[in-house]
Length: 364
Image 1 (cartoon, one colour):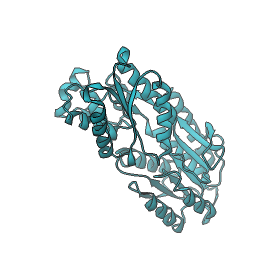
Image 2: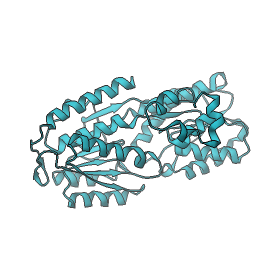
Image 3: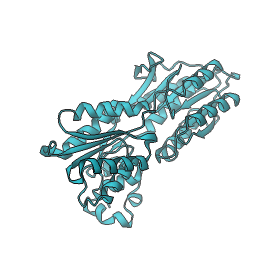
Image 4: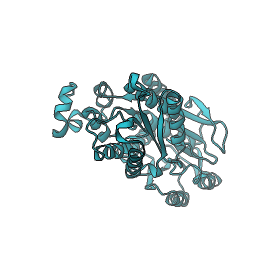
């Protein structure tokens, strides 16, 4: 299923290259006609708490844009470090810098709406990346985020087996400022409701691991450490904080804990048996989709052949979108997912601390 979607995006990229390609076509942008691939792309990412943005998203988008424009494009980058006010100021700076298109992964989907409108008023198309920003965006690319929650919920149920109602689970959702967190939660609830007893549920401020750890400590105090049979964690960073709180409470056998993003530390915890699963979202195809749409929009070209569906935001209906599926990552498929796809090498995962655990699952 993932391969099929990757193929769709790759095919879309080929179509876009054919359209952008011979390369002396022009498009309309804030500086007038854009010749060839000499465009200026503003890339705004939301935070650096999760390792993925600097390690994967940024370099992959830059690489795709370079490939699509034969190295002629310039990418202007900024990271908001989880501050919505900072990100709004960064959009202002991008407008002043006369970028031809913006790719924005919003810190706060609502707070960014006014800045998206400013960009549009300046003639700059906007691609919402990863999170569905509000305001008059031109395109959106991400993973099927409700499906991500379903993957997590299904995995947790499978881990619990016939003990699903023997105790309580804790749900550690993401930040309310992130529209994806709402979708992850909806997807997880669609699998878990009625099949488990939810003892405590939290929306975690800013997705921060330390906030998740504090919440988990509160849940342990309220429910009792021996009554918690599983934890739904919306991402790997929070899973790390949750597991730290469980260990601090003296649990020698940890309940299954979910995650997302396939961060290196998360993968290592999975190998070691501390974290049950993560959601692996291959970043290359979604970065490719963002770059392809951004280049086409900057050059005034249509993106009909690139999109695979349309979505609605609270402010904008029928936004052209490319949405991709994700994979449940457990110790059983580390080798055939993140290692096979060159996300991490075996040496990166299997440091001295994890070498024995790696050997036990044939990861060597």
